Image (cartoon, rainbow, N blue to C red; front, side):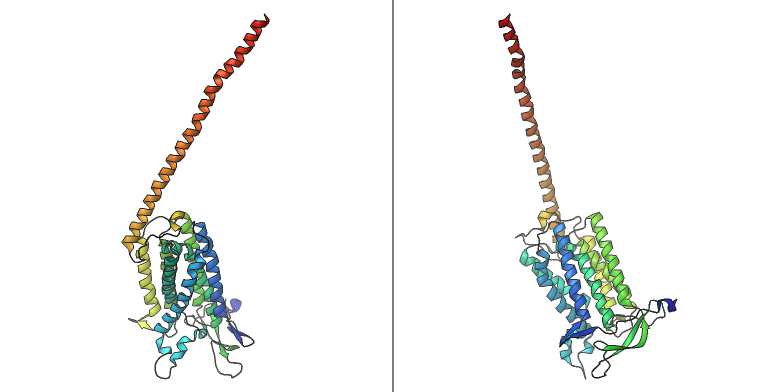
Length: 358
């Protein structure tokens, strides 16, 4: 079997140079993921009745905040790489060397999205539901950057889908540089392609979210909660397969620890948040002061009030339509009554004419 599949080869390099400008595959896939998320998220938002352009407007706050937050989480959880004896703290700013923590990106991106929604006066939970599958698809695309960087892989394996990790060297200095160098074709080890496991899991959750949303019309932030819970569940097990150095909490890799906590929080929100989905009218900009995301009881009360108001509006609209239909039917009856004498006159006239002739 191994001779047939021959393992999965890694790319020979992850950085190309266009003159003095380095083209980094990781950055390119992150940018591609953001573009896809904006395009699909906008389509989903408009399909729900939201105003065009709102997703891009909010993204101007969320995307930069997410990138900054991702770097902060990475540096905070792998601080030993940047601080301490023999380390250069300035390298914490070298984002081109890789290192973005997804949990920091989601949290800080969410804060940026909340600020954007406050500025444009649209409901954050509804926007989160619209973009949830798109954001997760963007994460899947971003994992291809890990493939080119030869990172986020697992323990050694002899499985036929194992990933070959190559030694890379700087072509100018000959120094070993696994991130920015070029492969010599020498296989260092064969490992679990955990980046690929996570990519496949993400795509499966995207499909599941779309189908659940179509069938059950999930709203009020509950679909976003399912996205967070679904991703966290898969990431927990992916982390257990990794063997690279990582900060641990109570003997558990910090990303597994974070995944478990976030999963429980997301499922709690899904269970407690308002059921149903917002109407298009509820997605429009409003001066109404909205509850904070963590004020679950107030969010539920606001959602219930909105649903009750919408139901009342629907009943009034149905009553009005019934009254209009009745009014339209009445003239038809009057016209019929008015035409009756005319018809009788039409019959009587020939009779008069006949009397005169006789």
